Amino acid sequence: MIWSGLMIYWADSDKGLVNGVYRIGWGQTTLFHFFPPGFWRALGLEFGLARGMSWHFFFVWFFAINGLLYALYLIISGEWRLLVPSRRDFVGAFQVVLHDLHLRKTPPPFVKYNPAQRIAYTLVVLMGGASLVTGLAIYRPVQLGWLTRILGGYQWARWEHFWLTMGFVLFFVIHVLQVMRAGWSNFRSMIAGVEIKETPEGTHDKP
Ligand code: HEM
Image 1 (cartoon, protein in one colour):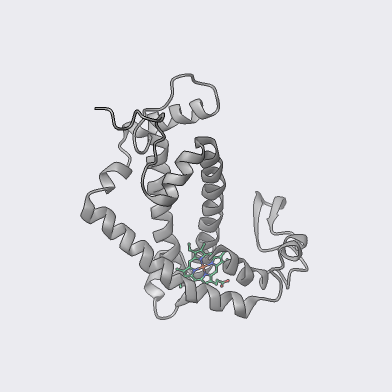
Image 2 (cartoon, rainbow, N blue to C red):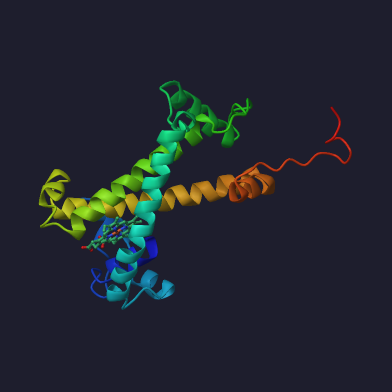
């Protein structure tokens, strides 16, 4: 979705010759443009508007249906209780961050999802829903005019859609770094869906 979205956005950066419309800055001061011309060239994202739109609107149904099924599963199985953070988790998450930055010695509680994970994973599910809603608002701004209006109009909905994408990128980068830190065994269990515990030979069948 991000790749095809970028192919769409390229067309609005004046064919990649000038900086894109989104930026970080204030007033006339700009710290960074999303994205400078070299970015599109380096990733080969140029001249792909029609292709980008086709991919975007094709894959969106897989992700939307998959996301809805996942949300339904969380609700029906009751697993949402493991994920949704409580008020206390905000303090806990701060402690996890301090620990990860080596500023706090006490490790986070050894539970399925620690407070920081609960906040991050709940947030990313909500962001998925928000991408769907803002995407629909800019996909059908006439038929779904009421939705586009609720989101502040077409330009705002588009702006929200873009910044949600940057949020996913940030989540992805931090998540991959954390997975690398957690080690190979953790990575295997993420892929396999089951926890693989290695025990010294011969100890596994002892009572
Ligand atoms: C996680 C899911 C999604 C991601 C990461 C994503 C990402 C992006 C990105 C980066 C852009 C280019 C931004 C811009 O040009 O302003 C874009 C454009 C667009 N997206 Fe998505 N998108 C997602 C889901 C959706 C959904 C569900 C729809 C609804 C059908 C949708 C519809 C559109 C449309 C219509 C545009 C063109 C906007 C324009 O330039 O006028 N997207 N998307």
